[in-house]
Amino acid sequence: MSQRFVIEAVMVAIYGQLLSANRPVEYIVPYTTVLELYEFEEGAEPLMNEPGDDRHVKEKVKELIAYFEEPLNKKKIQKALTVPWAKSAPILLGDQIKLSIINAVDNAHYGELFDPIETEVLLSSLKEEAPILTDQLEMIQRIISAAVPIQVFDIDDFEFALEGTAHL
Image (cartoon, rainbow, N blue to C red):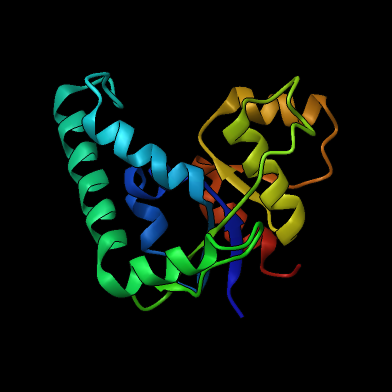
């Protein structure tokens, strides 16, 4: 059985270690974060502080977009978009890693403290009963402050998160 995490699509592109896990992992990605990839690809605003790192990350974003647009993967994603909260069939990203797109719907439940995409990530985590993996320390602090009943891990603690959720 694979370990599951809710994560934004851009983080899958940015953090290569997420794709080299030594055990089965499923990343559940809200569809709106996939749409954000196109904004990141076309936007002039850098994703990373160092120009070389930024070029590399934008190339990885383009690769992920191209992978999602491959006919079989696109079909899986489109099928999930027909029903709110539907989840795509797994999209394989190697031997151990699969990714599922969820058609999350922001119902403004946490709208005062979190932006719409963060809300979809939270609600996906609640619905799927899977911890969130993020690099946004401010979001982690707001989740804790708001006492949202989910687990959340910093991406820097990915190995710990794998170990910590192995027994759940």
